[in-house]
Length: 199
Image (cartoon, rainbow, N blue to C red; front, side):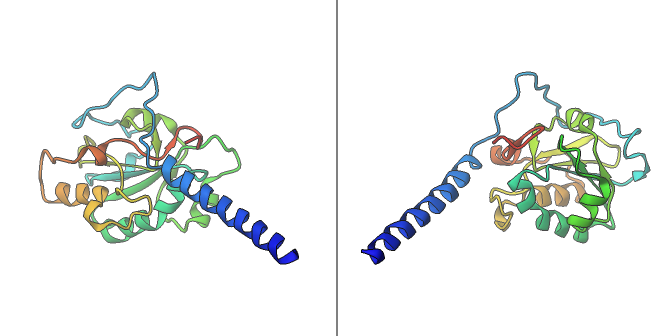
């Protein structure tokens, strides 16, 4: 009888864990709802960074919009860091933390995620770039015009090399392609709603 009880208990436990995993996979596979007050920003729009990232010179700028409470953002960090390592000599990288959690500081983010690039807590940059979820990538050309705003990858773990959208955007910009074409999946926001992870 005791063995049956243990078997049933373990079966329920693993079923519950599996159900939670499936639910999270399903919920993060859905597009992030567009906020009612959302104002779209078109590619080519000039983004004023004079108050926040003024020292980027004449290099393109890549901004990583990040929420430490968002699972998708955390899964994305290794891929983002690989982009910094690969393109850091030609592109200025920065992280914009979008969280209302006052516990986080610049040093907390820098040390926890081993990042040695500018880290800002400025939600106005997200508004200026038309970002309403995390993680999102924004790439500005050397004149700070919006070149790409969208997803990093079709896979939440950023492991699908055929859909490395953010990297594709960098490569097309560095190859002087003026008007890149991206799939709808690249441009439709997926992940966690701002300012907190409720999706």
